[in-house]
Length: 231
Image 1 (tube, rainbow, N blue to C red):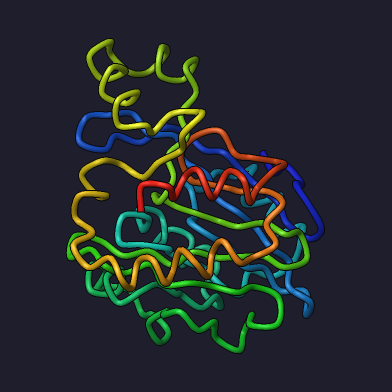
Image 2 (image 1 turned 60 degrees about the vertical axis):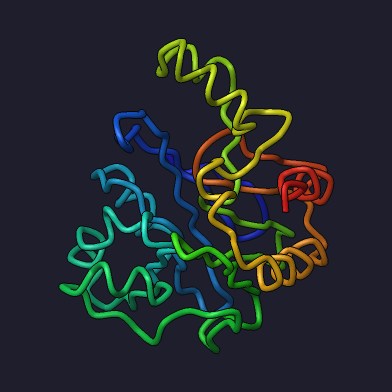
C-alpha cells in the first residue's frame, strides 16, 4: 500500500468514505524524520498490511490531523501506536475530547519536526481552518481539503451525473484543484487567508499531495498558484 514518493516520504491511498453522501477517496502520508521516528499525516483506515508496512519503516511518533474533518481513524491508530503523540489544530482537538492531544497546532511548527517540516495555518473562515505542511527534504507541500483534484475517471465511477456537474462547476477537478465552493464562500476574513497563501506560494514546492484527488508529482508551484487563484 505504501508508495515512496520522495526522500523519506511515502503515500498510501485508502478506501472511500462517505461525506454527506458523496464518496471521497482517502490518503495518508508517512514521513521518516531524522531521528528515525515516523510522522503520519491524516491517518487512513488501518489494515494489517498497512500497519505492517508502516512499522517496518520505524516507530510511529506523531499522528497528525490537519483539520477537524480528518480525524476519523486517529483513535484506531492511537490504540495501535500508544507511544505516538497526537496533533491537530484547536478545532480538531475540540471535536475529539476523548483523545489526548499535544498543544494545538498553529502556524509555527513544534520543535518535534521544525527542522524538516514547515507549516502554515490557513485561517479566515468561521467554518473550518487547516494546517498546511511542507516537507523540505522532498519539496512536498501537503493539503487536506484546500485542494480537491478529482479525475474524470473517479467521478464517473463514484459520483452520479448531477454530482459530477457540480464538481466541474465548483472546479474541484483536475485542471483547477480548488477548495470546495461552500468553504471558499466562507472565507469572510481574507487578510489572514491571503497571508497564509503567500507563505505557501513562497515554498520551493516540486510536488503537491492532497487528501482527495490526483496528486501532483511535478510543477508543484504552478499547481498551487492555480489552486489558490480563487483567493
